Amino acid sequence: RGIAKVVTGGGKTVFAGMCIDAFHSKGGSRVVIIVPTTALRDQWYSIMSSAWGISAEEIAISREEADEDNWSVLLLVINTAREVVPSLKCQPECLLIVDECHRAASEENRKSMTGSWRATLGLSATPERQYDDFFETVLEPSLGQIIIDYDYSQAFKDGVISEFRLTNHKVEFTPEEAERYADFTRKIIREISYLKSEGLPTSERLERLLMMRASVSKNAELRLPVAVALIQSVTPRKIILFHESIDHIEAISLVLQDLGIDCRTYHSKLSSIRARESLSLFVDNSIDVLLTCRALDEGFDLPDIEVGIVASMTKSPRQRIQRLGRILRKVEGKVAEIKTIHTIHED
Image 1: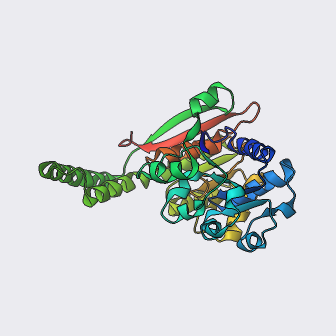
Image 2 (image 1 turned 60 degrees about the horizontal axis):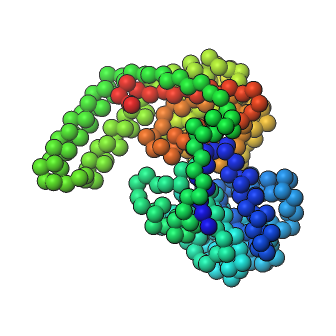
Image 3 (image 1 turned 135 degrees about the vertical axis):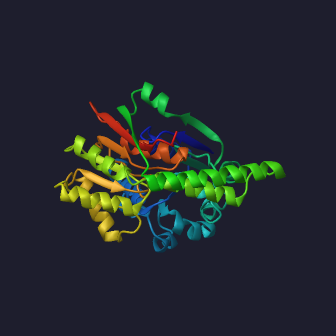
């Protein structure tokens, strides 16, 4: 029982494979693996069938295959797992592995861990949750305590992740954005003053005002031309750009295409066919530039990415760590470049 808190690229999947071997050597038979997305499920399937020698016939990946009960590995996306897992009668003989386990703690997703398991393993670069106590109240009771804590500094020292250069690029607000930001700041100050007078720590209004002010910064208009200029400065290298706004990455895509730079977008509003096409073109080097929002924060493994441009992001430590992990996977001789864009009002 335990959670491996390991930086992206630090070997979580390899460690899970070693745990499966150890489980089998102790007489264990079946393994249930839960992942947050279909992309990550497909990645696990590929690793198990090609590198670990587990035949496709032994791996079940759907509700229907799980019901057939002739599998040795049950590999499920969490949306399916929360319906299938509670009724599994074989739990006491199974090893449960939950990848990106911080995602499994929500009210609905925790159903995927229901039951009594012979052994449990959680995997995440960021298992602790920022805005609730579900790590302590859900993940630790379900999976166990953190048994490995391997961070970026240690991985860099050990040569496990790529060397990198980090540069920060500041942008100004337009006059309209500056006024909106200042207006929200005045309202925030007044709300904080009121809360102090009432002896209250926070309020929904304060949280809403902070989010609205942050949105002004995240969507600052001048982030777009700076992002385009940075991409132009590093082409033709393999580049991934992150932004918080789908509309903005689509706008950046149009500008790049006008400049003759072939790129694709990848986000939650694309059809599954178009999303797979964008990813496939990027993976097989048919295009050099992929523009994405949060859809690739987790579980996307492509070590040959050379440049990561963070055009906009939240202040969530988890998101920062996950996005860095997309860029810093080790390749011999690689020195990754990370370029962040932020307004003068951001830390």
